[in-house]
Amino acid sequence: MPDNDPLRDPIRVFLDDFRDSIGFLTVIPATTLGSRTLVPDFRRAARTFPLVGVLVGLAAGLVAWLATALGLPPLLAATLAVLTTIALTGAFHEDGLADTADAFGGATVERKLEIMKDSRIGAFGVLALAFSVLLRIGAITAVIPAGGAYGIAMLVAAEGMARAAMVRLWHDLPAARSGGLSERTGPPEERSMLVALILAGLIVALTVLPIFGLKAAVSAVVLAILAGVGFTRLAAAQIGGRTGDTLGACQQVVAVVAMLAVIPFA
Image (cartoon, rainbow, N blue to C red; front, side, top):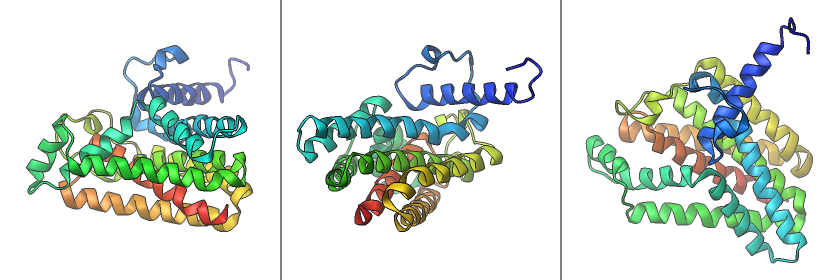
């Protein structure tokens, strides 16, 4: 590409943002991917979050397909697929879900925020994690008999949409406490948030639409939006804003809902 090509710099910046997002949302260090950013600007880089979801969903979908091809039963293949998402993200989002579930049972906003900072996990957190894992395993198990493409499409779309929902919540709500992760790294700019939502729509159009059909694509998008908006309002009502934990919890909720939404169309 010529040095004077006007597209060169925007493309380079976008790829840098993508590498930084991979380093932030997965266990893969951004530096191993060639990132030279010392302090990532997630106000802009958050636009690439759905693409990280594509990578995580694709890896999990391929694991499910390979396990099935090797003769493993659908339940075991689905379990390995979910384990893949957890391994790639270091249980980043699951940790947020557990902390949020425990915290939202607190009596006051101050107590809720205190619980979120506690490394211990309570009954609500354990139950939230159990249901998240079981529902995802069940959803993948349900579509595996239809063919490997169904599992891959479901996972890629769900993981992509779930991370776009994170960006939307991050953009829409103020930080619930000072000094937290979501305050130090955000919020995303309006343009970045819109790009993330557009990318999520394109991901659904390229995966769910050709594999599951139009009704499934519409169902997944509508229910994912409702889940994301609903959780955002819940977080606002519970703690008056967002924390890093609520971003993770939002990802989990939207991913589960999106996966369940397409099952009837497999």
